[in-house]
Image (cartoon, rainbow, N blue to C red; front, top):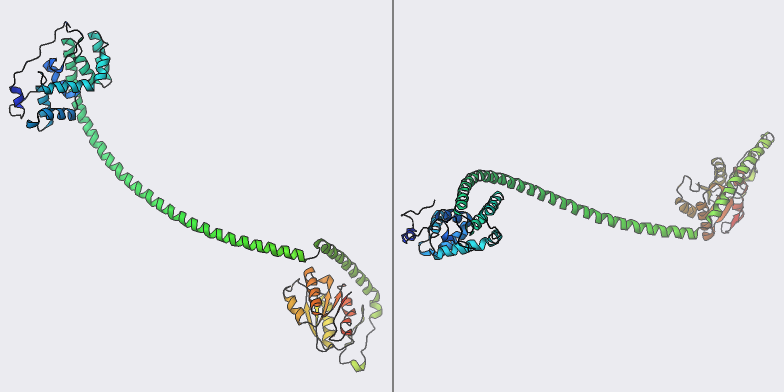
Length: 418
């Protein structure tokens, strides 16, 4: 066991007379009183001090009582404490009190055992469960523990200490391996942390860009909503200004039917009068030969009776063949010819400027759009221009009503709906 050396700083403790505790008799005649630390056999002191007391607590107790000659290392502290356990001293008393305080619950549990068999069974169970320190103190100080049981327990503790030392060496190697592994894992964790921080920074940057894009889109949507609201207001105003749309559609459908019917009648009439009119011509008088043309008489042969005086005649709508003849008549009568198809191919916005430049207007209602019709009618009413509305889309209608434009003087104004 642990023995003090003469060169140790605690050799003063061994100079006092030492009374070795007698071996415990096999007959328990001490009643229920538990043994004290200094009453235990000397072979019990080293295991009890080394196993039952942590080194930090042992150091505090020894330094408190041996402060003038405080030992330098853990072994000296252990030897000094064991050297004071074989007699009653202030140091041994405080060690006993510390052991009692630490293991009072286990000691209280072991009081129920009344024989050595029960104590030994409890001791083996505690060793198996890894609770040898508390059970060691409770069994050694139990009044029913005989010397044979104490010796068996001390022998077991001796072997356990050897095994613990070997396990400590294994644990130390494992500890060093775990330290190395821990260092590797820490480095890996730092690398992962850096990577995650970079990813978070990139995510924050993208989120900020997304928020900026969202703000821009919201502004754009707000502008589009304002535009849509304005357009809806404009459409509502146009609907309010426009006459009955259903009635207009119905009238246009009727006009289409009438147009088809008139075209059929024109074809029939052309077939009937073709043989008789092939040899007829209309000759203009000699006095007016400078302003009239010779025309074949097909449906209706008309010559402009008045000189237009360089006025501009606008024809809105009509077929190409009829427009060509009307152009010839108007230009032959000294006028200027202008044409607009009513919004089918020509831009409808150009109609206003064309109407403003015209002096006389011929409007074929069956060959123009509804919007163009209302533009022509509104402009002529507002400006007082002479306007003739022709329903028949053919050449005959244009030639028939062409002279109506020249019946009034250039200063006269009005409107004729035919």
